[in-house]
Length: 70
Image 1 (cartoon, rainbow, N blue to C red):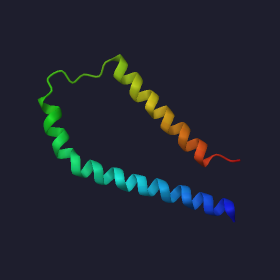
Image 2 (image 1 turned 180 degrees about the vertical axis):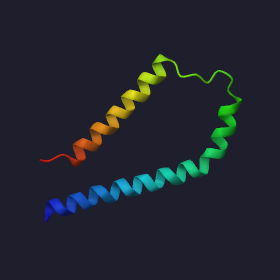
Image 3 (image 1 turned 60 degrees about the vertical axis):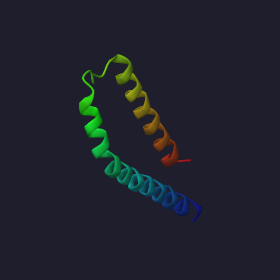
Image 4 (image 1 turned 90 degrees about the vertical axis):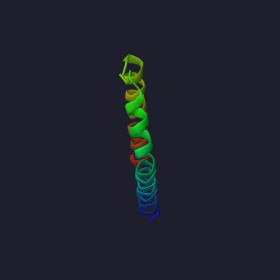
């Protein structure tokens, strides 16, 4: 019973966070797209790619930690 509640709680939190991110992107995307086009040198360098990859791996690890079998 506790495992079932924990799984549904985890799923509910992920759905809620996803919904909040969609609303955030929907509200800010017109502002971001106009500002990003104004930047002439918008190129991903080695540090930016490394930071994005590290963030991706941290998020994947956190999700695996939450959904892992105990």
